[in-house]
Amino acid sequence: GALLVTHAAPVVGTARAGTNRAMRSLQAAGIVGALALGLGAPHVAAQALPGTTINQTNWQQVSDLLPGSVVDWVRKGDLTLILGSMTDEVAWEPAVMQASEANAGRYDVDAGGNLIERASGQRPPHTYGFPFPHIDPTDAHAGIKIMWNTSLATYKFGRLYTPSAINWIGRGGFERAVRGQVQSMAFDFQPHALPNPDGTESRDLFEALSPASAEGIAALTWRYMDNRPDSVWGYTPALRRVRQLTAANRSDPYLGSDLVQDDGLLWLGKHQSFTWKLAEARDVLVGAVSTSYVHLVPGKQGVDEQEWKSPADFPGARLGLETPGWSGAPWLPTNLIWVRRPVWIVEGYPKDPYYNYGRQIFYVDRSTFKIYYKIVYTPSGEYWKTIFNDLGLGVTADGQERQVVSALLVAVDSRADHASYTKGNAPDFIVEYHSARVLPEQFTVGGLLRRGK
Image (cartoon, rainbow, N blue to C red):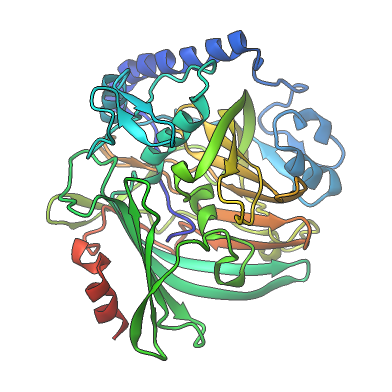
């Protein structure tokens, strides 16, 4: 599946006031509950004003506003931060917020972590909005409920087409890359229910385009709504055959990189495959290419919806290796503005004893439920990786469609002192949301074979 996809959005237009009230009601429950639970108020470090540059000389000013590993990057000179603030509000469009409010009290989770309707005790065939709009931190299931809310952010794109590039970067700079394209189709968490006889939550198709040794390799993944493991099929050009593959390797290095499949969007794993615990509520600094809305461009008219595209003038992220005179880590961004966001900190523990990661810590936005950071530990409990992406806000002219226009996803392996980077929206990486070219028949074994040939 896609290792970098975009999702989440802001509030604009005449509906701003009503949505602001809805957002305050959603957030108040979480913040007040956090204090009652003893999770504490968001950490507040020394005053650091927008426009301030944070580096080796003054890193203490933001030491409580970043994961510990990121603080170390700043302290060592690998990363420099320029602080700022969002000029547009970070929240979903009114339709999403209204649907979320209507879900209050409707859903629960069972002992296996499945999303269920309280009335039936079964997974609903279709969900829209956050299933848990009010998070109570005293709830023993708060962690898994937060993660189910992230599903809306994950599947916001509906039908997605995006170029794909995974880049290997060492201390010496760029090493190699695998380029391709990703198409995804979400069946759940959409405004309207779609025909879904196989009970799939989503389907993803990846095709490698270069280098020549990888060209033509393709993989199709079906994610089911119940506890069935994913179904995966692969096409190999040398054999000209489709073979069914195992879904048990989602924690193995993806194409040999520092990323694994479950690292996509910071979390593309199956919620039911982990146990979850809410650890804390706090504020963190998050990088953004733009602190204002990015205006999505209309594309083709699809069968039942309008396609939207990231604009060609969106500059994308610039890494250290692309920045003349940069002396920090070549894999860290140099053109982001770092803004403050309220997050839930959720710990995830794999149920599979053979999963390559141990504990993982997720920083989840308390408004949009987009994940910004993932801190990975080994099964023996040693710190291993930090994986992060950026905050980007895409909006249509009428404000009724919002997506995250995200520019990068970086996985930094501390043990290897190495990183892998997936490129997102950029002038040469135009992403299509609700893409007219993404059709259900492509996500079948027959469609995979036809595409391979």
